[in-house]
Image (tube, rainbow, N blue to C red; front, side, top):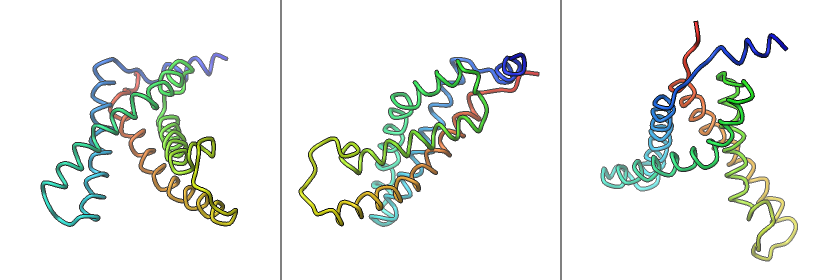
Amino acid sequence: MAERVAYARRYETSLDRAGLALGAGGLVGGVFAAILVAIGSGPDPLNILVGFVIGMVITAMAAVGIGGPLWVILHAAGRRGPVAATLSGAIAGFALFLGGQTYGFGLFAAPITDERTWLFRWLSAIAVSVVLALVSALIGWTMWRVAYRRIL
């Protein structure tokens, strides 16, 4: 038990660093969105800028709404290291994108399809969600890197 308390005290944060971390996570999400816009619509600077701003805002909102409660729970539990931040970002991102692509994990009304189509929809959703979970893990790690400092 004493080892767990020592682990919980290795990293500390403050409210101003949490705000900076939110901005840094938003920047990573905005850059990712801008890259996707550039790939999809060509090198139009206005489209890339709009994609960056919208991606940044949506990433920050998702970080507060989804990542915030996870972050508070992990922080209170003493799990403040980079692995916890990266895994929480990956798991939250995976669940968010998988749920979005599968009609709320099949809980909401979906178009009528046969079983084989439904299977491939799920397989495709899982594959896409894994890729986006990697981006979410990068965002989680970036936010951790900005927010936490090692206690000496």
